[in-house]
Image (tube, rainbow, N blue to C red):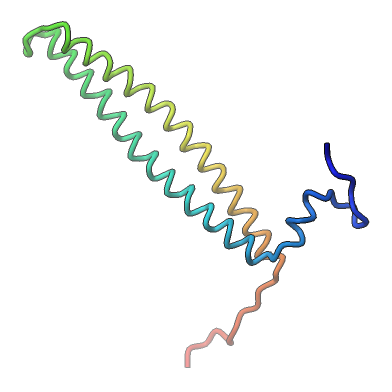
Length: 129
C-alpha cells in the first residue's frame, strides 16, 4: 500500500530519492549505465555466436544432403540442433539487447534531469591562455 503524501504533496517512497544528493544519484546511474553497456556488448558477442552456429549448422546440413560429407544421423541431428539453437539464441539475445538499450536511454535521460537540477557552472572563460 502506498504511503500518504507528505506536506509537499510527494509520496513518501519518492521523498527518499528527492532528499538524496543528486551527485550520488548521478554516480549510481552512471555505474548502472556502464553495467548495462557492458551487458549490451556481451549480447552483441552472443548474437555473433548464434549467427555462426546457425550458419554452420545450415552449411553442414547442406553438405550432408548433397553427399559431400558422408551421411550419418548424428551429424544431421547436430546440424539441425545448431540451426535451431542458433535461431533461438539470436532471438532471445536480440530481445535482451533491445531492452537493455531502452534502459540505458531511460537512465541517461534521468541522469540529464539530475544534472540540470544541480545547475552546474562552467569554470573559466573558455579561452586558452
